Length: 73
Figure (cartoon, one colour):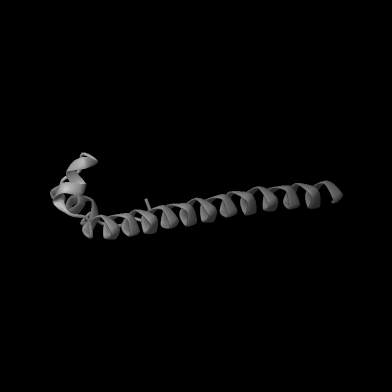
């Protein structure tokens, strides 16, 4: 009986760890997506000349800003 309880607890810890990892992974993706969106908003403020200096076009900024957000992939 003690062995069954230990096995059950170990399995519970395993699944809790996997769930925690999945939640943390998704949170990191959300943070990255939000940071990318902030960057795109900032680039919208830049002039065409400034964008050209860093090798980015207005179309590049538009394309990145219009990408759909898929948090659950």
